[in-house]
Image 1: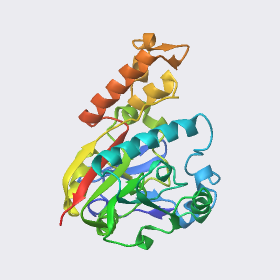
Image 2: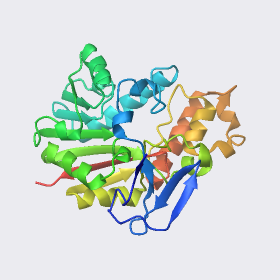
Image 3: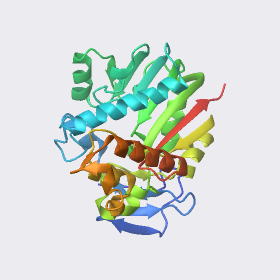
Image 4: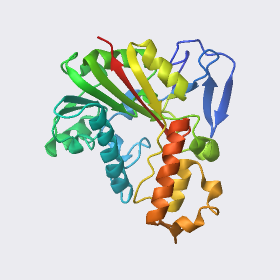
Length: 296
């Protein structure tokens, strides 16, 4: 394991505010209040062939059903968000694109993906997608992209400002950045405690809260920054799975009429998605979704 000696967000040296969650050693930065891991695995041992199938104990196997169907549904909703911000036709670069599931929904865009795991990038190319193998520093054609997305990338890096600066340089002036990260202050994390699925020991380094993510974008040259906190509850989740993501598992008895034998009813989905929207606005949903514009 590699020691983290300074806050990945503000570079303040690690102080004496350490604590443990599920055996994971964490620190709460005394300056920006961001929580971060005190050690992480060697990236060269993580982002290798087999990563996206969970072969080495990292990541989740997103090909198993019904999780794969859920991910496709959520990715379609993420693409809809991008379309509202930057309508096609436009140039779109997706950093850390995996097998290119977002790009598969990106009709009308000149869409390119960047993926560090060559095996995964090759699978995307075989599916007919334009995915390049490389890390952020290898991204093609800096300064030309209308929109750059990075879903669940920033929590993996040890220098957040450097990563955001690199993402900013990829955009044309006036271009739009979209990033998503786990939300440390979510109801989901607070209720799950040691069982929070987004802890990902050894892999996830920085655990953001809403104001810290906003400040990170603003301090690296982004304007019109907006941060919401969606939990992305969606079919075909069971009632139990949706309540876990919303941090409302303890309220299952009260919400009993919204499902039949664990299967969410049509009315149930309307209620759960309304709760999701409320949590997103309050900043307590499972993830943080931030957008910002590169100043001219």
